[in-house]
Length: 380
Image (tube, rainbow, N blue to C red; front, side, top):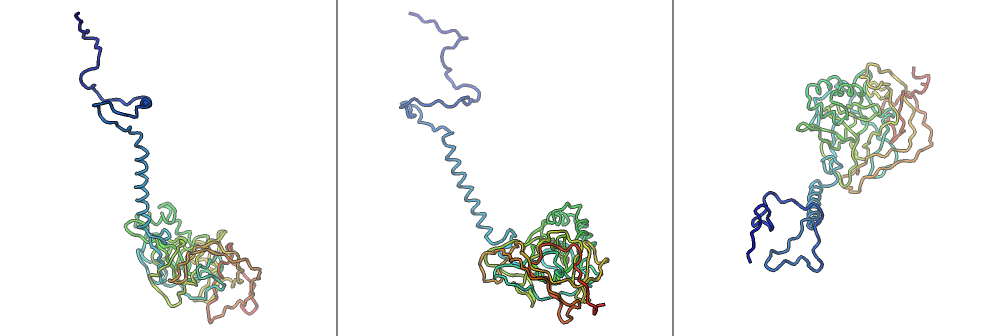
């Protein structure tokens, strides 16, 4: 019996060769093998092939292990105790009359301002593992010479204006726009530190701002903001911010001075209200001066010695061990409010020693105007 061949335009079986064109993935979920099949290959056929989607969990697990290893390596390479400053466990001591490393600008400190003062540190008990906090608006926290600016603000403006890259880096630390830097600098008040003060200092390296923990010597010329916080170190033009807490053993580097004691270092806490007038001590003239916020000293006027401020609860402040040998983590503490009234002191300061700066974290409210006490009849 003869069989007619199929028509040429109606194939009845699969083609003898591979299909042309790219293979398309199935539109639905893969079919499950018949029960009992277990993916057993047919005799003579290729071996079983594991579907790609069943390997995804294993690939994800391997990826997670690799990522975790990379993160651990980065953490270990950074070390600990750097406080985010890039200086692992280091505090750089900066003398008042030295520029220091990586300056933003040339010095704008005024040579005719008051000489460095080394008054007695604030009294009061502190543990061996904390810094003293002093309110930024406390009378006598800062010093200066009457009618003389501690810094040449316009010189600082000109320096940064002539160096756009430095100006941009400075603005990034100050958190202002690059075009707003001149106005920002002119809003600050030039004064001098009267106590060794801990800050985060920022240098300029390769077009960007760096940061490191520093202690600025009493007598350092700085620009402070309307809350009393130091914002610029005039000897180098570096922007300043609040210090960063650190743990572990701290290594002191940089300069040193005879009066330095780590237990005497303070940190300035921001005033809760805007300060309109700073009450500063003029060591050269042995007098108290009222300096308006943002003024370069032209509007200075003599004022009376303020009453001794009453201690109150200290704000939480970054702290540091007081000796190189300590390795206890830093902690912030506060002191209870005392009900002791301000002491009455004679209006005429003792000429043998400069008057002491305010006690440790003194009031958390700032002075919006100078505190004046009625002078006795002897001071006229």
